[in-house]
Image (cartoon, rainbow, N blue to C red; front, top):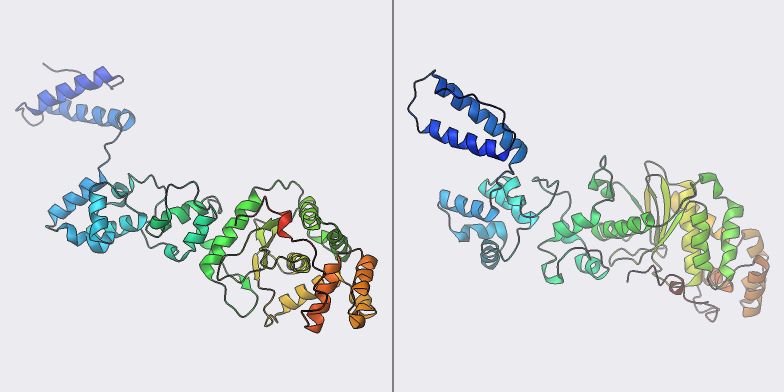
Length: 408
């Protein structure tokens, strides 16, 4: 008897349709018959209901690997080049070790298993089966782990290298917008000095800085012309206070500039950097040399970069300020601007301390300029190349102002 086929709306309709489909499939009917038409219609309405209501069956990645081994008559030893070692192969197949993104990429290319099957158990989104843009094992993984960069990832130091892509990618997430690529962090940047900074350590440091800057509450819009000689000299006058560095951070925040304190990574030889984050200026200092004079010179140096050099095609400048080979126009301009803001040349050249080298004259000049005496002592030591002069003028450690912001 001919039965009408209706759109499936409820589970019981679905069950009835499956039962009827089973009956028809076991029936020997003629081509072009009503039964054949009914079967085709049933298949369509069942497919439509399943697409909307029934969760798809996701193949198991391990079963897929075992199936492909059997299909291609391979042994588990053939997985070693793809997974890493016979012990790792054993752990993966026994479900004691999750597949890493590097393993997934190798299994996809080596055995032809669809990436979506292999990735299904990892929960990773937006996985690119092509070669990654970074060699993730080159990041300073242990240092990043010690800083808490991977605190929201369940992993230990022993497994860091195996899952480097996962943890670093997750750490990077949110740094770039949907219209940008993580390769933006590798965009051309300017490094001062002759010692080449390790690219991967510098990228890691830059991400740490960006994350801190974005967590700061900076409501004031930055206006570039606010940074002028008077503004910078007023800023330096904060140095005379014990909490001067912390006061400077607040002063910059009120001007729309983020001042981030982030210790350097090994092999970066980094004192500070000036950068733009979607147009917002950031000064980042490492406090590699925890001295009052070094802090204020580095701060003003980076502010000069923001004032004169940063732009849409020049968004990141990293500085090793103790490298004597720095001789580019940008570095000379930033140095000159910082020196003039700290102690104007006209005042310095007529000061007693230039020739007397005495504590009393250093304190007198600092009092005249309303700055910290350590800045005067630092300038004298730098100009004479005599680092033993006025070593009793150091001031408090700068780091003590930022203990709540230091990650190491």
